[in-house]
Length: 290
Image (cartoon, rainbow, N blue to C red; front, side, top):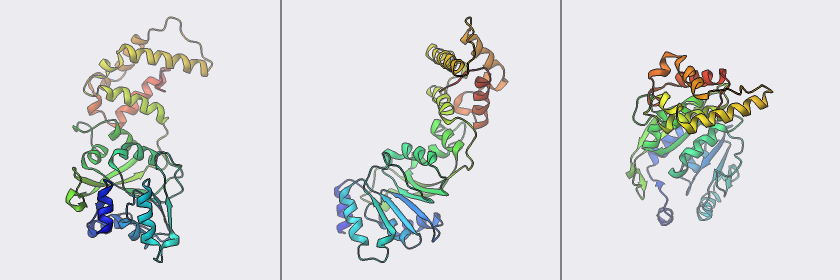
């Protein structure tokens, strides 16, 4: 009860249902040789379960008072030497090597943490993560879904993403204002052979107006200026001449007319293959997004 009150005092939420804690840990399929990255361990309900099964748990906790609670919990247990506590902001820290990530994240860091994970090398086996339900549904949204967005495309481009269980707010103490979902993320290894910064740059433009046609997006003055600037930089780096009479708008029109799908599709309904084709069409004509 003291731990619960401590958690409540500092505005965080303990997952109080031991069955759900055990189920989340089971979904990670931990091995005795695994190094586990845990973010937001709180007072250690999941931590203690994972210490029973894994070689090491590296736990990132930014709140020093919660660090103290976690240290007290393990100090007289046989697992003390297996726990490595990192009192740091996980978004600013260099992540260590790990095989599995299991986390009940502060929901405000969900998006940056997902991309930090997916950029991490060497590859990890999978991540089992608790998210606000709407965010979780964005991760798995398909073309045409209301929640389909840049996050959906990027995450599914870089990883396999599955919803594995719902967690109602009454399973926490104190209850949060939102419902939650547990998500399994498995990075694609090897990753797609695409410059991710350029890929993401294109998606930013597309999803800035996801309900508009591609022509409406790429005929904007600011977008045409960006494409021209990047084209000049690309030519300079590649030691290629720049056509002094280059008409970027006409060139973009030609690119969009080169594929029948580009004439009718809107970003909200485009698949990953559509976006790859669009990127290839621009790149083939010397236009880049980063």
